[in-house]
Image (cartoon, rainbow, N blue to C red; front, side):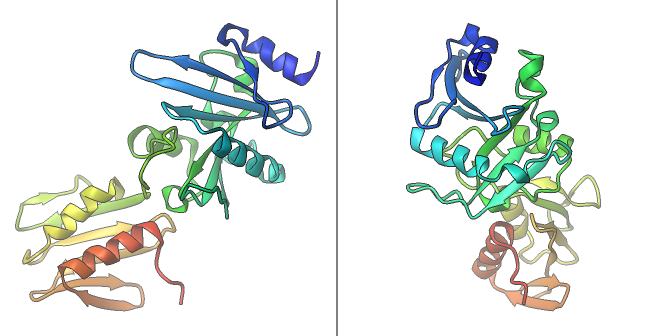
Length: 254
């Protein structure tokens, strides 16, 4: 039996069909009351593993093809022992994604409750913005990020930068539950930055996807951003712009 036939046999209940854009690839759809899911699966060149591309509610054959071919051309970067790999320099016309994530089978657990054979052999890939993952996350952290912060199946999503925060605001009398930075949404980070206005002895500490850190305070007159190599003062608009850049692009390495 061909690898495509073997793959189809394991998915026969889902009525798989050929995905014509890539040799040996198949696709299928399934539904829940709330969502429609699309999945494309293609075997690796050694026929021992599969690369799986899932999507939710929206599917574009062109983007799917570009993502899968990009990952397959970098098979030597795939690792069973590393939970997530970030493949950079991805380009697809009509989209702003600049990278592709590949999750190991033990991290993705794509078919955990459906098919043991496929679950143990399936890498999962998806298009991403570089700032959405670092690439050194544990399987547990990847799972948390995908469930709480990064809708990786949504190909129409806005960028969701991986940003961690701790804060203590003496004015609002609100502070984070722990001193160490914890994952946050960009919108919540920007809210806490704005709340620093005229808040004496208050601070917000941030860490971005590159593990770069900074601390933002109100120094009595302006916002002050403390960095490893010094500090910079900003007005409200400028500090918001700085934090957005910090989250989405990181600091210049100069």
